[in-house]
Length: 355
Length: 187
Ligand code: SF4
Ligand code: SF4
Image (cartoon, rainbow over all chains, first blue to last red; front, side, top):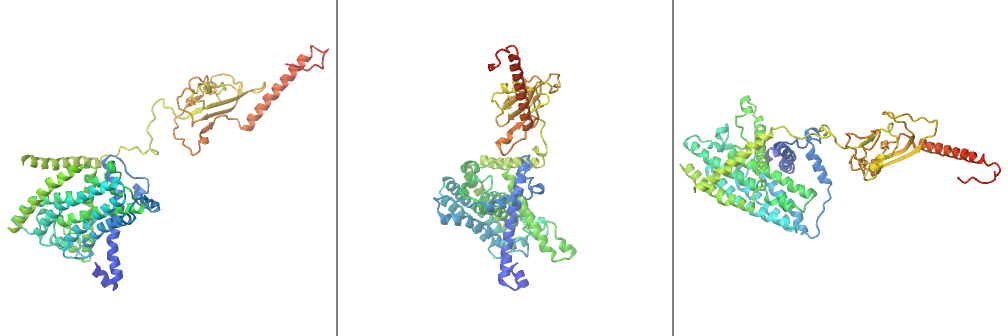
């Protein structure tokens, strides 16, 4: 994308800016639509109506909320650690935003095509823990601190099954580059990794159940990493007020919110790249059949965003289905169930790949 | 080991069952009643804001005395002969001008005790329950249909009439004692 804009404008600054602003716009849109959808989905699942007063079908509710947030006084408690307190939201947001640098929205729309994209995404997204810990510690509030500690424990634990599944996938695919992984699953949906990858043969059918297991594991553990219910103990409203961001308000609070939704989309994107073909269309491209080449990247972006939103929807669906886990249950799920399964899965996928 | 696999299966299976239930509810119509647009039918014998049909009120003050929180104020002035106040709908002759009839709904506890003693059944509950205001004084409702000037006029009329009567009485008292006209009347 950078190259494209560089060719177009001939200016390093402008092309860099456009490349950087695009994911930002995406994050803002995801938050804007995500909050609205979250409210609507939760309302529908509970047989309610949801926001319906602000604008048609309450569509402007999030915008109204955002305007309200902008006007809010930036109240801070007196006994806080000012520096850390102010850095924390920025760090959390930066952590979740930085992931977008390597996410391929389509074959053309990608911030940076680095070879170790997957590794980078994992590393940068766990950067968020530092921000959360900072926020919890500097707030000088026991709820915040408890939330931050829980969050750290949770994110660090769930990093392991995620990494194990990613390892298995990397073993199978032989690359860490997200755009290459997407490219490998081209054409039709039976080439997606969840259905055994692009290579046709006995191993494809052998792989299907293990890919499914891998998908379930990575979906659960990424869900835990972005602190969504049922894994939202760091911000458990009913026990910890709001967890690590109890003391935040106004725009700083909005940044935590934004990074939560940004994270949701990033995680959905990574899951869909690893298992569901990334930006690849499930039924071939209209651009190919019609012979219009420039249409293809747009179609790809459409499919990618659609897949991302589908997984966001599943996350919401789970949120309004399951109650919150207890801390010990959380650890049990991770250490006693996900990790052993992930290991077995890793070994089996490795053996099948070798065959 | 068997236990372990069973747990895993149970975990996944129960989550799927839960997801199926919530998915079904995604398409169930909402049970919400859109309040200001759609209103529930009020129950029979509901108690809301009072209304006084002042045309039927005979100013007997019974309601004010029945009220446990004394939020009804009834001021009356007797009518003078020659003034026709008409009759109530159930045929009672009205004899009093109701110069002031206020109910303070900020105090009212909606007990309905004022409704029963009314001889002409002119104070009753309506179905209006949305009458919130910003000022407490706006909750004091005036039911008298006389304007303050008219009420003042009635009072003056009555005072004049009273004075007239006094005079007549005094005159009548003065007549049988013509021998002592200088003595001031003392009744
Ligand atoms: S309803 Fe009760 S409180 Fe209200 S005016 Fe009548 S008697 Fe008084
Ligand atoms: S009891 Fe009825 S008639 Fe008597 S003052 Fe009250 S409202 Fe009027």
